Image (tube, rainbow, N blue to C red; front, top):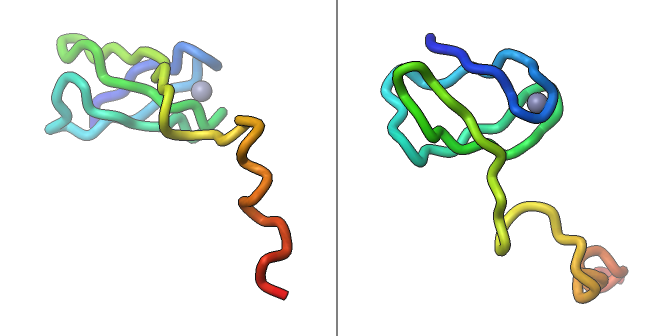
Length: 69
Ligand SMILES: [Zn+2]
């Protein structure tokens, strides 16, 4: 399985052998979301997402706010 290095923590990240450019993987070490930007050799870039991933918006307070009582 091909590997590349996480741009965030430099850890080796495994990439599926049949990955294509634009595929998303995540670093097992630091949990960063990564995007395959090159295939020969495998190159990974940090995913700069605007609508997925961590919800640190000010509106995210209804996520686990005790609605289930
Ligand atoms: Zn990492």
